[in-house]
Length: 409
Image (cartoon, rainbow, N blue to C red; front, side, top):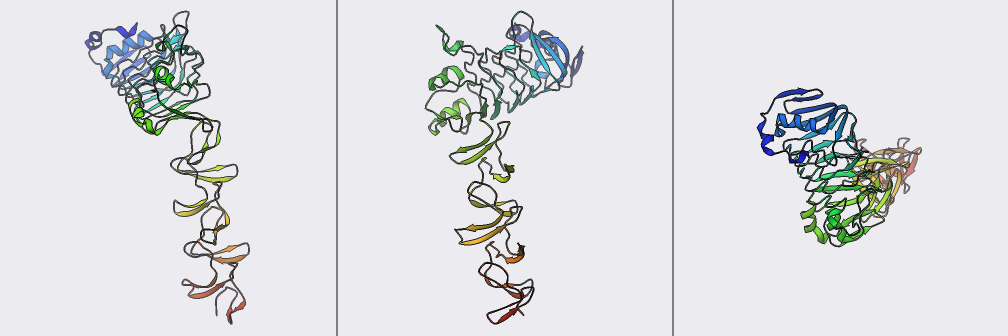
């Protein structure tokens, strides 16, 4: 098994700045892989260059890799490896009657920060055991193409991995994992044993085919997420520790704000803080405008919409109805006991005259509608607005004449 090649052998080979072997190319720290290989061939080629000399890996085009059993520890202990990128489909098969494995593939790659494995075809993979174990610098990993319907072992897959890692496993299907408590067995035999134990995960998103244990103590034994008083919010499709478990989170996941969530059905979702909107890919809108079902909404940095308020956004004030939709047209604000007006773009009209529905209206600097006599320094003139806000024109007001432009003459 590749795992037990001696460290003396790994250190005995002098580092090479550039080397080639068929479709394997090593140039100044970048390993480019193209073609068809047995996992041993790639492993040996890396060892010849010096495992600590590999900084970047590129799977160039369609690549086929044959593994042996559950292990495919090609990059094990490449401590200076920083990035992995796929530019095509990387398919795996097993040299034998059983399905293959990616076990320990990146084990001990402590500098790996960005792993884009979106080209990996894992439909024939039965083991992902320890795949990212001890990848302590990992902040970004793309596993969107992973087909785990045949995977029976994900134990220690992300153990001690991540640095505030955002991990999206919404496509993972854990239905084939070995039983959590096999008859006559022990927790260590579970296919999810310590899957996330000691990981530093900022956000973990799970899909509907990812089976989460309901018994609190099963997290400790089977998923590596510790035990304690777990709170389940079915309406929000979210599972998270109570605040009293802050110490638990620091120890096990490395961030007090960590939470686990099933990727819910796209659409509006109510939380204790307000309404959020979930996109098709499971992401939440934040710090942005979004046009949804015929209305504009603004999502704050926490993903909650502005609602029933005025909000300064960019360089203007915007109003929002109780349902969060952006205000347009006339807005009665009971707090001011006055009218405001928002244009079609939602911006509050203030400090100007505006022609609305065939009439002129004035608005003070705070946006409230003008009434009574109004001095306009830009015109150096007096105007008059009725209680309705409409500017008086071509009429007598309190014995004073205002002309067609509304100016007192």
